Image 1 (cartoon, rainbow, N blue to C red):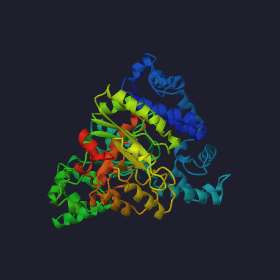
Image 2 (tube, helix red, strand yellow):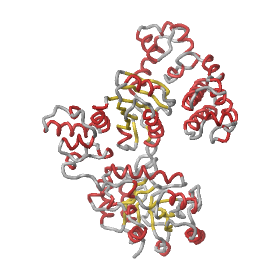
Image 3 (tube, rainbow, N blue to C red):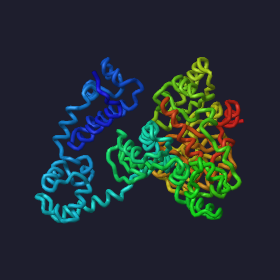
Length: 567
């Protein structure tokens, strides 16, 4: 007979076991197995108790026999012998204290035995009182180092990728919405604005029972530590070292709270000036208004979409622009920039076609790498006909329109690496830089200018080559390249790969001023990668792109005509 332990309780226990094992110095593979198991349990759609009773846990991806045994014990008894054992082997507060550089579990145990320290705050107070230096094995220098490490920890703000932030933010949002005392809840801050990187996940809940809601937020299984709490807010650390905060507002104040917690400081400052013009002290004075849209309208403005709330001219624009034609995911009719097993993709042409078709897409471009990208099994000329034949065979079995294309390398000279005679036989050409990214600004600018002036129509792929938090955009005079594109046969890709999100919104805005057209792509290397469309659309909206400026918002014939390499 199983207990009333639910899957979130099980996930929380697995995650704690993994974290404690990491503190003990166990292998990263063993630690990751518990994290993977926790995620697998959280994602279950089938009843966990039934899986346990029918001994089918090992059928769940990410759960092996050893992990299944631990989960079964928790479900049936409400406890884990392993968790109890590991907790007993380590001092209290070890998970929090292990985050301080220089503190091993052994040293934490010494501090606990000598001073009763069980938290970072205990340690800080003991250091300030000069008590740590008297503990054997420590001393004045160590005490000072610990104080400095604690101070750095409190002020350090790590940026995480939007995709990683959403991976924990959306389950936390679901967790809040499932609580009876919560009338509604939404993401706010950088995540809602779809910023490429995020310093903190922010959520807002409407409730008259703030204390109960904050307690519920703390019980979210991916919470690793509570940073602070007051009557209306709790600050947390989530798995993956992601900062998060949950704010609770009375239902009548909810719209104002959501608006003020979403906008960037510059947006809120501009909004504040507008409020003053209307005789209001602050936007938050507009309580008892049911929606953000109504707040903007009360200030004489059209509602500003969350992605545009950066303080970059959108308030002035909102006086006359209703943003109704800002591109949405529903506007996109075709998947562009997709790789298959013919180069470095993981799935076949038919796999990709059927997956795109299932998403409601009307066309799909097969744009595998070209010969110069040898590291990605670029398609040599002798394999090109085989690829085209396979596209033709798959086309007979699917309804979605397949367009044959390439992601052709832009060589150092600005030439593309397929002969013109080949490019002219394709339906679509994406032209990208994949090598020699450290060219100086002048040389890279000339390389791109020459490429964009090529007489065939091409889409400038992942334009500035950035990898978020890993590789900066390469050096070039972007506005000069945009000027050339505006007068040539080219469009710009908004790359939805969540590790790229290239090009960034400020350059999209500059491109729009020049009347340049765009394609929102996934740069998918698998069927799963097609889901990255949401990220491409998010960046496009941040750049202010309208439906009429996005080529793959056109139907199959319109898109094919617009991007055809030669006319």
